[in-house]
Image (cartoon, rainbow, N blue to C red; front, side, top):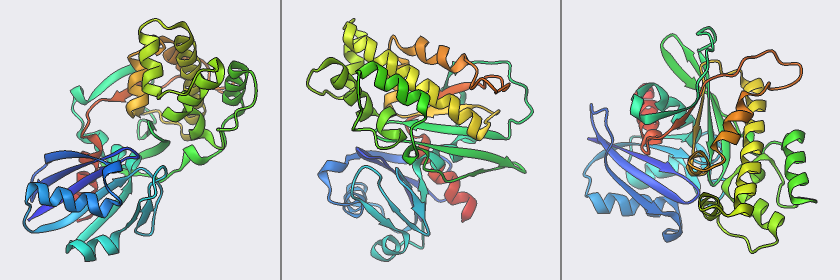
Length: 311
């Protein structure tokens, strides 16, 4: 018997399988979402590719809200139903969880080489039962992680779909010199496409992918460097707000392709310096440690931990 794991983002889906009793995902394959009309089609392609026999369960991390056994990708029209997937594929159990929650469930299984320090502090151990995962990629969201009696519980959230904090909005509007019609909620400003929009609006140049903006900054392009650094300040200011909202004294854990690229760019110091600042004029909370999740299979590990906890 085997368990299939899936990490579904806005751009691609990563699958793995786990034999009964195993703690390590295997047979990991990545599929481009553009090549498939639905998650069900991608799942069928994965099963055919690896030739799995009897599969007992499916555990899926989805980059979108999950409620009552149903989910929908925030940035792609894919729908998920635990009941429909179980019926179509003969699974005994199907678990659906938000992708950031999956990363939260993975934290306790990540080895030291799966995390990279971003901001180290002398924060006291008290309050370490609260942690926060922040994902910055095609979309933006968070997952609060609460440790209770040796087990972790990841709370659902859709922080990216809330309003953009005013201090972040001011930074953006001052930089582009006007209105920002592409920003309808917080994630529109700080996800990857938000950086692409910001750079195009500030320079008047054709819009390019966020990865290309960061790459240009890395080669010394002055305009791209300015855009990436203002974006780093915006993201840092938003994380300061999240620090107040969730009080993650156990640390903040960043994830996603955009934040990885940012931390490998000249804007790394700008981001870290922003995180060191007071969260607000009334706050006496000290900075908390910030780390980057570097293990590509972290969400798959979280899917496994969640399925094993609820089996």
